[in-house]
Length: 133
Image (cartoon, rainbow, N blue to C red; front, side):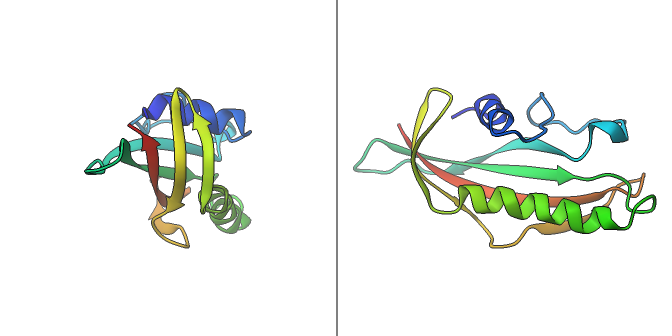
C-alpha cells in the first residue's frame, strides 16, 4: 500500500488531506487547515507463512491557529481521535489497489507534538495495516 493510495482513501472519506505524501510545507494557509499529512513509516516484516505485508503510516493532524482561537487545540485533537476511531480494528476493506485485512492504531490517543511557528496545534497518529502481499 502506497502513501498516495492512503491519501486518496482519506480524501474519499471527507478528510482534508495535503495531496503530497511525506511532506508538510513550511508555509500553508490557515484556510487549508485543519488538514492531514500522510507519511509512510516502513512497517514490520512480511508474514513468513501467509502473503501478508505490514505497512505502517504516520498521519499528522495540523489545526488552525490556537492563539487566534483557543478552541482549535481541542478541535484538532478531536479530528485526530476521529481518525484513530476510523482505523481501530477495521477489517476487510480496500485502500487503492490493496486489500486490507485489518488496521489498527498504534496508540489509543493522538500524540500532541506541540505548536508550529504560527501557533497551530499538531498531533501525531500512527497506524499499522495488514495487507494482502
